[in-house]
Length: 111
Image (cartoon, rainbow, N blue to C red):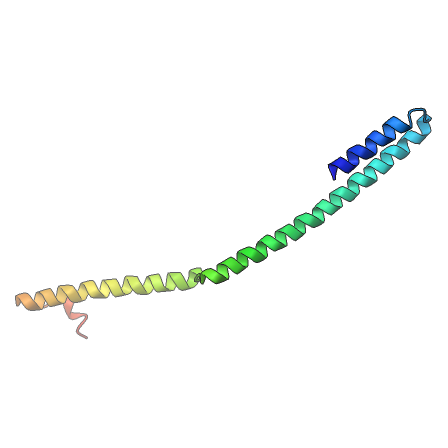
């Protein structure tokens, strides 16, 4: 796109040197029109690239079969609770095997 603008400027400057001063603003108007068209075309390309990248990322996430944060946090909480329960049961088993009387902590699991 820049190459087209440069050619346009070069042709205009080299072929029409003897133009009166009143016609110069038309050159700049034309140049502004070309630049404006290029900018709007680039904005459209930007939007298209953005939507393509977003679609590709969404597709990759679906293929990875990722879990949502809420689901992950819920499972992490279940794992923490299970770990605490296993530790309490291990203490209870150790106390029962040693013949020591159950404490309040180990008897809570019996009920």
